[in-house]
Image 1 (cartoon, rainbow, N blue to C red):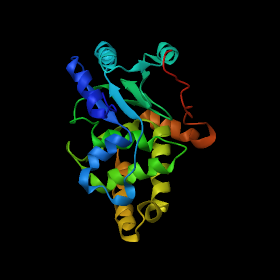
Image 2 (image 1 turned 90 degrees about the vertical axis):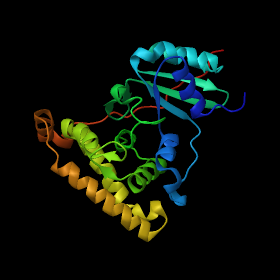
Image 3 (image 1 turned 180 degrees about the horizontal axis):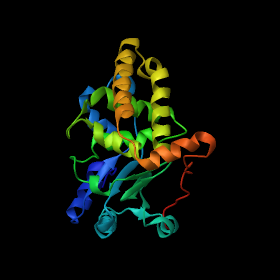
Length: 245
């Protein structure tokens, strides 16, 4: 078998009776398709997926069928929420029900809603929660905003799906709005074109207006009183995971 692709992984899990959705850079590329500006195209070496907690058995069966090796120690310690497998040099990072990085996103109910990938709004949320931004994170956010329209229904970036978690969690809101501010300031540079950068700024402003107008929970308001005097995020470390030997 040649190099394993995201289609192989998702297909194998479905074949075992489970559900899985792609996230990360490969999912952004699929969401954007041919509309992706050339300057924002990038290669993602890892395969990142999310599965439902009930689908651990189909996941493990699919990985075995594909000949993937699990990171035994990491999976033993973290298997409730995350597992890592290797197919040669390709790392397959599996999130189970939740995506826990700088902030936590509940994604279990979002698996399988969109063909192959998480819905664009969820892909965007996974990028907006990053505190220490890499260029690739900014590129992915820019690509999603430029290629997927802000909408009220599935198909584009569902506004309520983005504003809901941000209106419930002040810390997530603070990180996400800061991330959008950073991208806004670097829009022309990231896009490599002033005109495209101006379009991106308009998309950022439209999303920002929706975020600002969205309702906020009592927990959000209480946490906002404390503000930045207390740390509002986690800084995840790159997992120390190796194939079983």
